[in-house]
Image (cartoon, rainbow, N blue to C red; front, side, top):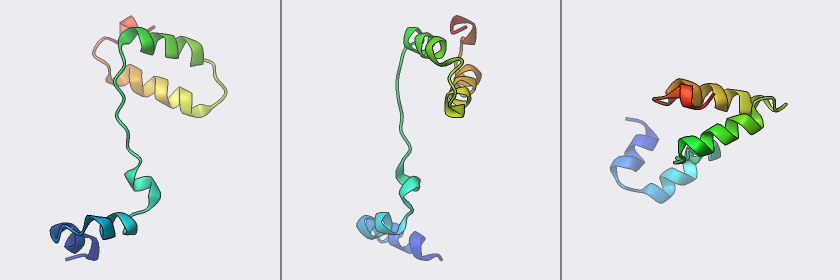
Length: 70
C-alpha cells in the first residue's frame, strides 16, 4: 500500500495533511439561493476573468431550474 494510505489507515491525519499539496485541501461548499445566483450572473456575465465564465456555465448546468437564472 502507499505511504499516504498507510497514514490514513493509522489515523495520522496531521502527518497526512502535511504531505498533501496545498490545493488538495481547498474544496469549499457554498449555499446560496436563486436570487443571489441570478444577481451574481447578471453582474459578472461579461467579466474579463475567465473564471467567472466557467463559474456561470457550471452553475447553469448543475442547478435544477436554470431558466430562473437567465
